[in-house]
Image (cartoon, rainbow, N blue to C red; front, top):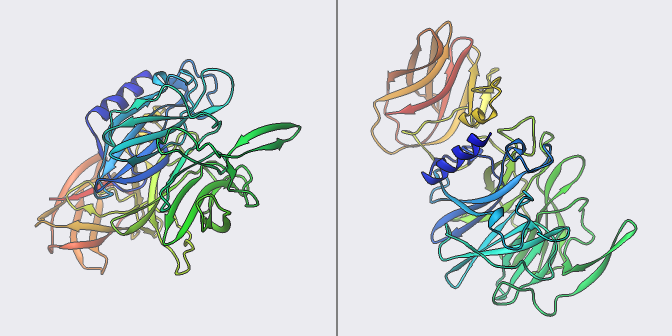
Length: 456
């Protein structure tokens, strides 16, 4: 498994790109995504799951294992560039160098400097602290501060740069404190309170913004401001896995009134974590799921879908999709298994479903068609003149597939010869698509498998 870590490092150095089909980070595990807009681009600051068995000094092979942070960027929500590691646990002066507990982070900009907030287990004693790294560019390089924020013991920092001119730090189960102008310290008038947990009592810093809300095992607060309202989003366990709920207030530190769910639970993944961002006039929800690791929900991957508000400022529930957001270029490899709609008994499987090497999961999925089954893949951009379509397929008995636009106009008929292993076939186009269209791929025979299609 050490080779796996080396492979990921090499990919980061080369600045690998991934498409906006969910999950959006497709060469490594990623979780707890915070998305921010800096300099006209969207930057993604997730945590980074690694397989627990790859860390010889990590005792729990059934738990979250996270040793560093990467930063990604995109200017179109379709192509994502990995700028590499921000900081490793071994480089945190105050942190446990073998704790593997670098959980959900956040990043903000002030006066041309970027402040990356992150949790980590402390080098001395028990519990978590929240530290800061600074940089002159959002992609880094970042320099860690020598100490964590005094008075804060918790995880999952979320930052709010409010219209009142102040910056507020949220953490843990929705606690909040105003930061000083230097962003390195909480304000001197931050309150403390005594909190009981079973038979024990704790002194807790800050205001409890989730008081009175549905918050059993609440964590991961992410605040934002929109149209005169403050929003506090957070995961909590409603039944057996987490949902994303939200509350609204007229003041940054509350009181917040619970409004409902943004995302319902997914039964096969215990955790969820979120951020909400407006990019070029559209709001988006970033979250994670265990797409690449269906049998181990401690290895997760970042996804994104569009988010919309009602007229009264409340948030419409988001339905997670495989397709994700953004326009896929027709000349790229269109992974039709990240479909918008599926019909007629077509199914999706990993390309290497039975391979013991789970790193091969990052090679993605395939679509297995039955006769007359189909998948629809929305929002493909045809901004050039294309003459042919390429299909990567496998069909032991051969067959035929058609590619049509969303209005059932045939773009290409593709003859698929007998192929026991995946191979490439090309077909001429019957018509020239233009602009943004939806694609519908239909198989005319049983047991046709397609990995991807592309136009040239």
